Length: 470
Ligand SMILES: Cc1cc2nc3c(=O)[nH]c(=O)nc-3n(C[C@H](O)[C@H](O)[C@H](O)COP(=O)(O)OP(=O)(O)OC[C@H]3O[C@@H](n4cnc5c(N)ncnc54)[C@H](O)[C@@H]3O)c2cc1C
Image 1 (cartoon, rainbow, N blue to C red):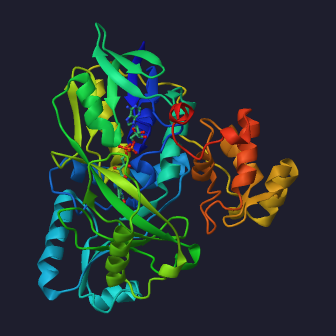
Image 2: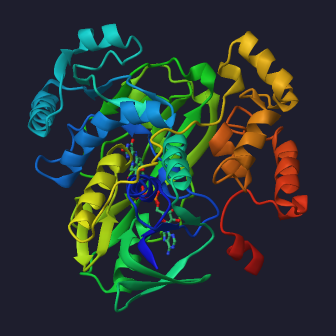
Image 3: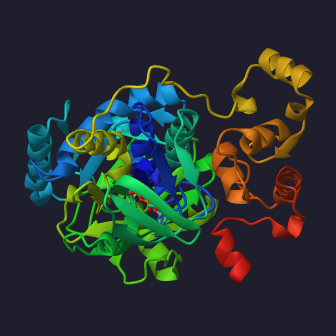
């Protein structure tokens, strides 16, 4: 019997797992894919939002600002990439100034520090490539950028090291009330638990319906992006937004923590919870809108495009509640869900503590070390590492300078990678200009040796069961 079963291994579920792992609880996280961070948490803008956009007095506003406050410290403790680069929201017309002032006012009500309205000239002093058409900008110094894969993996590995069980490749198919709590049915058998956390992203409505909670709907809202080569990463140093619309925060231009340039996303409501295809129309919209903000964006440097699906709840706020006795929803976690994840985890733990005695674990480890990035070491450190482990002397991904040692680390560490994308998200092998063209054969070989299977059985990503059934 588990104390808590967490459904979903995105950033919400993994942050909740890391939070619960601080207490003497038997916790299991169930994820239908072969790895954590396979849903929306892998495809977003990666902004640690300041918190001026959310409506005051909503959960989004409260948890955004709290999450923003927590992430810098967490990035040090759990070793994931984060940078406080600041953001600007642009307006191109004198008539839009009141909208910027309203955003500043909302930010002030939400408790966001340091907001300031700049003139176009002042904004261009900070960010020289901004369009000459920019009339004013709201400057938000507490906005940042993070690596969403590293952050999710950091929570997951920390939870794992503190005793949380992870059942990957395991899909929840039904939930039934039992005398002591719930029976969670999966395609790999049943789990008995006293409590359930529903962190299933765009499927959180389906999971809630399985348990019979008060009904709500989740609409997937598609967001398409283009990612540019590191050559283009210095085009801007801040995250550049345009004024938000009722569909979201609009098309942004931002550096990533690893030095690429990201432009997007679109915002289109769709029916299909699996439709992450990019489209010519969507990417053309991203190109046209982003070009309004920043001059001379180098679209010839695009190395890949991708789509993320926002889980838009029909209450338009995060749905974080005890929907049935000891059945807790963390649903409708659209943007700023990445920023809010550690604060959502705290809130879920507080809701649980009203129902269950939570005693702190004495031997809890609150730090975790990520994969050592060889290219970031000094020559002396690199030489020492190669002497100790010769695999660090062999470069596998030439675009990102990722060594065999790093890939072996990704395979052998807690919750090690079992797919090509799993290796990519832990090490960045395959994230560079050639998008895994050169490093895949060697990575596949290392994966097959580690997993004891043929190279033909190595998957890029996705559910094992689905592929075997196909
Ligand atoms: C275009 C876009 C831009 C965004 N930009 C930002 C941003 O800049 N900053 C920010 O703070 N937020 C941003 N967000 C929001 C943020 O990405 C999400 O709020 C966050 O990733 C949601 O995480 P999650 O864990 O709730 O969902 P997910 O990451 O989707 O995880 C849910 C998991 O549940 C699993 N699951 C589903 N059904 C089942 C089942 N039956 N059995 C087992 N497992 C199941 C899925 O496989 C998945 O892994 C953006 C989102 C999008 C789409």
